[in-house]
Structure formats: C-alpha cells, structure tokens
Image 1: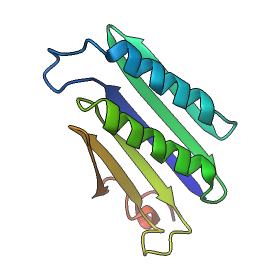
Image 2: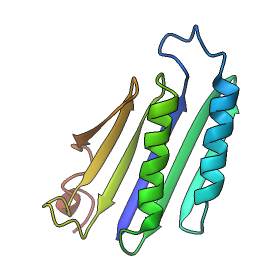
Image 3: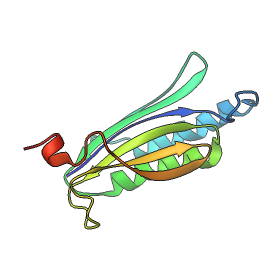
Image 4: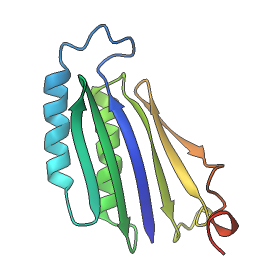
Length: 130
C-alpha cells in the first residue's frame, strides 16, 4: 500500500518581488496536473488571494506510475518556481529500504527537494496502528 498527502505554495521567487511569470508557470503546472489526474489521485491546483496552491493525496495498492508522476510534478515545480515550498508525506509499506513502517517527507524549499525523516506519525506501528 502506498499513501501520500501533500501541499505546496507555488511562487516564482523567494522574496515575492518578482512574480512576473507566475501565470505562465501556473499554466505549465495545470497542464502537468491534467496529465496525471486519475481515480487514485486527488489533485487541486488553484489560486487563492493571488498565490497558487497545490494540494494532493492518493492511495494505491502498490507503488505505481501514479506515484512517480506525483514526484515528477513536484520536481517540475522545484525547477520552474524556485520560491515554492511545501511537503509531501509518503508511506510505502512495501519499501525494501527499511522504511516500510514510516512516512517519508519530501520537503520543497527554495527550489530544492530533500527527503526528511518523519517524527510525527512514524513508526506507523505503534504510533498510528496496532
């Protein structure tokens, strides 16, 4: 089982002074979102009070193309909107790297994606499961 939940604030710059191309950036992200929409994914990308936000969640039986497409979307945002930030929590209970009992956090800040250790919901058993 793979489960993920995430949110991202999409910004062209880190200081808010240079957002001249945010509309074209948003158009590119909208196109990518439309290409990966499926039954297993919740994707909401819209502007609120002048700032674009992406919210996403999904649940599949096994790691599949859906998951890779979501990770590609976050990589796209990091490449074209350097002022963006947010997190994606991902749990893959079939992970063979010893992380099958925990969430992994993909953190986006200043155009860089890092993988962080979750300390809020992990280890999943016994923190959220018996």
